[in-house]
Length: 239
Image 1 (cartoon, one colour):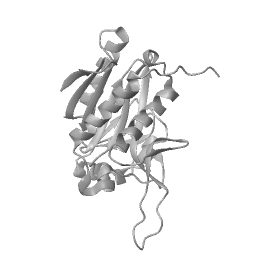
Image 2: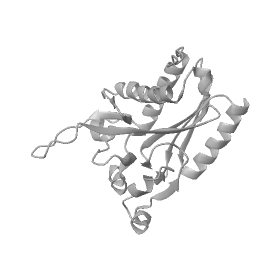
Image 3: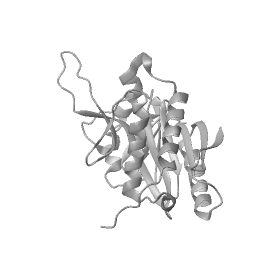
Image 4: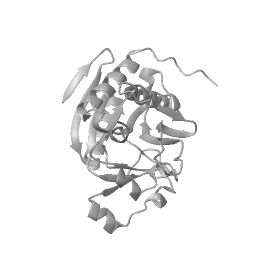
């Protein structure tokens, strides 16, 4: 599905389920086109085939816990990536959004862009009565955990959305991964985002039978993107 929506003139493309390598190739093509002025700002929505992506951070590969044989048995690929961040898992049931946006058009720098992505996810989750928040010093979106009966108290927060981006000539790549009905057991193959002892969660774990279908989450996220980008974004004050 491809559509233009709203005053931002941002094109939205729903790619369905796609391999990481194929999506990365498309991102690079769109990044070049937006830089050259040959394509409008574009939001790619998709789900990935099961894959672990490892950034160029020196410690990232140390956070891969599963052996190649175990990963092969689970049907999980491993790919290196040029985004920021550490290591993460993508798979079916996880909504991935890759905005290809010229930052200067929206008066954004890297820090403000990351906070904007977090706010878009927070506002999207609020539509489904999930009160999510930021954790100072830890990029991403988090929710409070729920203690289980007769179990030790869990950590204060669980991550529901991971972020990792790259900026090339002031145009963004990569983006966010929101767990909707993702297989959370697959996250046990890594230390997610390199954060030891910090759990991950999903809309399904929080909402159970009330979990919205993926199409509804995609629509809500898209509407929230348009809402934020259509409003004037104040330039970052000089320090």
